[in-house]
Length: 348
Image (tube, rainbow, N blue to C red; front, side, top):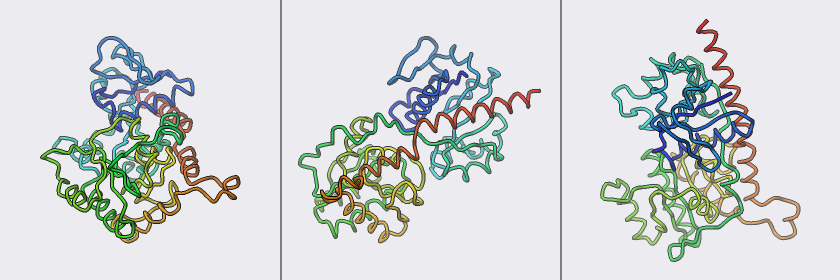
């Protein structure tokens, strides 16, 4: 089967692009002829860490289009389109998407234009009613060879704290950022030597969180304040962190990547991925989860290390169990087969 995953290559280094690349790699590992396709690429081919990037001519010979974005440019080819719904259902971007009616409105009135949909398991209840139930859950992948326990750990230098807490989830809604900062300030009451390292924000005159960063700096609690960082750098940051905090309640990339690197993670979602879960609206409970994660991050006593895995190893095992690319490839190929079958029936 030939699967053409359409995505604008301008998105490289963002989460949506990385998820698309990982899905293609997973499909190819099972023998599928899958590739990324930029509809604006008219001639030639490329390669991104072992994943092929093909031009528009290659896509026109595909069995199915997997439309991460820009799939509208392929709709008149007569090839069925399978649409991944990876976006955070509650995000402002997904709701507005630059149009008066927003992406929700497009799905409700235009879902018949697609042969089917896929999403992450914990997002299925949000999207299914909007597309008349024509959606399958697929395993969210993480590149287990790129996000690893072993590898360089980031050096914060003079910005290092006695405990290093990382906030690197750019897609959090404003309330999530406020929760994270306030939770850290409460956490610092018990651990006054802790510092918060923040990544992913454009720190300029338009940064709405500048007063918060200023408050942290006045208290000597702000470590790194960085913008976008490379995947390699981010992996090293996770390895060096004592704990990563997020209000995520599902399989967002920060959850997958942090656990794959073995880092302690506090999240807002249900139990299953990590033991450290608390409602971000309940700040005292969230701070307790942070405290427990930090206190339990160390190795077992030497006498027990040969018997029990370390907390980092348990985190890695969680990533391997819940975000295994082999499962992603299988789920995607099954979804593509189902979409093709239904498309053929509807045409007949």
